[in-house]
Amino acid sequence: MTRHPNLLQQKETALVIIDIQERIHKVMAEPARVIDNTAKLIRGCKVLGVPLYYTEQYPKGLGPTVEPLRVLLGEQPPIIKSRFSVCCETELVQPLQDLRIKQILLAGIEAHVCCLQSALDFQNMGFQVHLAADATSSRQAFHYDWALQRMQQNGVTLTNAESALFELLEVSGTDQFKQISAIIK
Image (tube, rainbow, N blue to C red; front, top):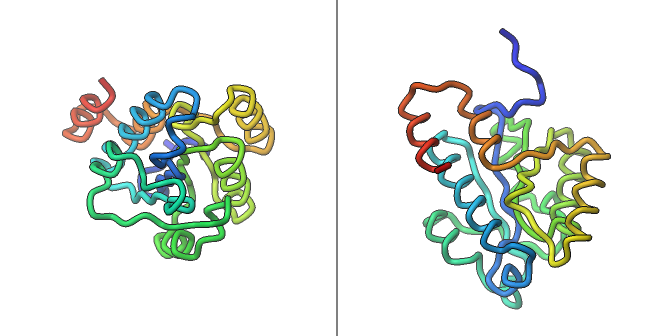
């Protein structure tokens, strides 16, 4: 059976986490939700072998990635950026192209700035973009809602951490299924 082309495919997807940093995440709407669901995505993508990357915007001023996520990311270094769109960073884009990634699963902050610009730029580069809306936020609900509408109007697929992980998993009854199920609970 041929799967729908808008379903995430394990071998074609990379997770990109944008700027969930110490000094800014605290002022986001529902910061605990963002960290919890981003952690699920990180743990799930590690189980599934999905490449993952994360960025930090001006860490000198905004601090490093929040500790609960840093622990999960281990020794992997962040991609440091000063532009809002992560697509301006060769350090990120080149590995995606080398791995022949076709789908980007996005999470991070802020939805209406860095996530929006990155999503649209990834699309412009030919990637299919899925935004984990429950792992994304802005300071104000209006900005978050507006960003989701604008992304969706421009063809970005809105999803959530659980849906994304089960799409990537595709089948039950395996060791990976058991691990993903435990992560989701």
